Length: 287
Length: 251
Image (cartoon, rainbow over the protein chains, first blue to last red):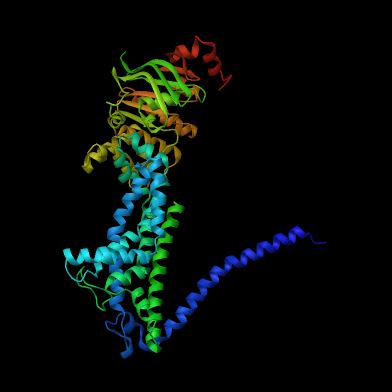
């Protein structure tokens, strides 16, 4: 005689396992699909000609995405230059200086920032940042610096919330020990708290990079999308994500496959970044 | 005898709870004074007034006065950072900073602006010797302080406190988590140190107080019940509560 409640428990358990595994399945399918579509061109044209190729003219048989790889990294680096100091400062303020009321006001505001659709960021960038750059710095305004500025703001929530978690998890006893040795609050922060939270803070930067390198909509709207390696911060550029989004709608044949190859490269970069970030977080826990 | 630390009707409350009730005590210079009493007796709170770590607590009310060298240490015109460089503290649980042994000791002097490596090394050697730790760590000053044993960590914390060149050392149950051998080493170090410092030792271990302190104070529920030379307190206590506590009838 099988107990009905036991049967029910088993049923619920297996259904939940199935749902849980489905996310893994989706991930696997995405991988399989992108690799399946993107790898053949690598075999046909050669890895070197795609990754290090300087010329992108897919209808004429040139599939070089090197300028886009460099552009993606430049934009991401620029975003980090702007977002990292801002975000870390904000996290330090929140964890060490702000009162309860300020925290209750600021944290939801930062979370809201994360929820704003990227097209809105792109829109604001086109309306405000691009003209300002054009009028005061020169060029068309659609540029590396405009894109970095907007992305820098977009990655703030990631950097702030993860750095904040890392900072508040530094044991209170460290703060007390440092204070007992006559350290001021700021001395304690930069000599004890930040070094102790270092791996978490680095992880926040890397996850912010992952967010910046994968961002598409805002980037297309502001970057100018020119097919060359920018030589100044005022030059337009085209990122890997932008390339896929701009051309997929009309691409056919090898051109279409080349966009999937772009996707493979992008996916690899993001996977490596995530791996580094996870490694950083795990090391912190192990300590 | 010269009074180093004094309190006058010191009263401390957290919210509605009064944890120190009009405590008046004079701690003499260059002695070890033992504070004993069951938990909740207010001895640790008294320590946190002297080093102003009580500033980190919320909702505190302080009445009466506390002085060092006759000057009040309460109130807003005292800089607690300056005060804590004169009053070193060793906590119950050793808290080495997650840095090397050398860096732990160099931390305090560096905050005061000593940057020259040779002087820092001199300070480290001198303080580690005073804390009876030098021989065990002299070959590995650059290894992480977290790799030391509990007893070594506590002596490192003592050495680190000495590096501040404080006038006063407060030890809040420094041996509560240590084995007897480590405890003995700390006690030896303290006995040697008292000629140059004023030491307050908070301990639940009455035997430890009897062994190394010159004066003993017994606290109970926020009140100072008895305060006298250690000999007197332990041989002929004037209060029956003190006697009961020393004999282990309650604790």
